[in-house]
Image 1 (cartoon, rainbow, N blue to C red):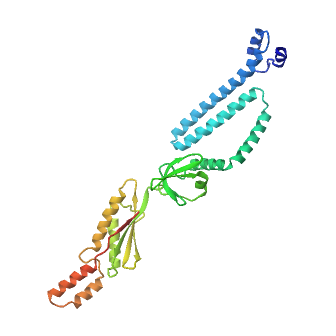
Image 2 (image 1 turned 90 degrees about the horizontal axis):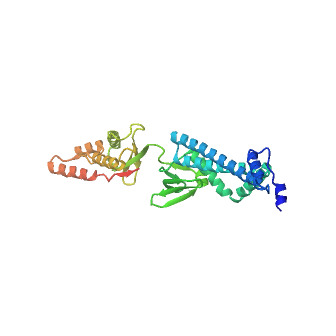
Image 3 (image 1 turned 30 degrees about the vertical axis):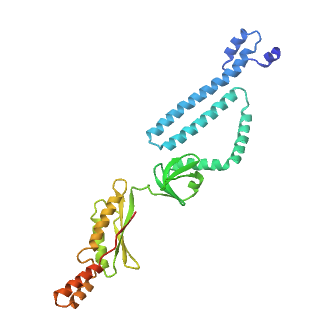
Length: 317
């Protein structure tokens, strides 16, 4: 048995460990340990060298990504892909060094990849979509996005799924293929966002005067952006007229609620003034038709003020 093994195991003259094999075989009467060590140590040494070289290259690549301020998710993706590539080439090099034919390894690897791809095609499609999302970066962690009927703050972006924290505190885990093929609305992509304060006035108010006064009041707010300019849009309502005051704010540097509340109070005071913003022609007609004595004039003025009281403004983001 040992003789058969000795005849089957011989030192390889073209192998870089041939000197070690020859030295060990000269001191081994069986002649087995030299070739055996050569067959085991050689592939293991090649595996370690290729693995260490890959780790060094991956470390340099990771430092380069950190210097470029790449996203943390992208760095994690590069590290994971780099680790898989390093292991693949290290194992392949070790097997080839051990004497396994390269053609056999490539054929086996191709068949195995085909079988895995057919069995896990949905998982692989989600992984490919996740890689594309991490590279393209239509959104990042912390952004407020909506995907279909779901809306929330992005918590994680992995290779297979994207996790959102909804407004009511629930966790929504969405497959990356759904995110990749769906319509994504990123509400955090720009620093400015449009907000609206809605004000109701009565029909007998002077609409042009009220719109002009509301527009000037919004423009006088220092926190409101100059571009795009504020706009005031009227809307007919069953009981009166709604004035929608649209303006733009940098929501990252200003208190949106405080500014909206202050603006709503000031807009309310405009139509609650002494004249109430009533139509000037109607007011002059009522003045000419009033009796000469003071008491009826007082009752007419009080009725005019009672009829001109507006409703409470509505604030919308």
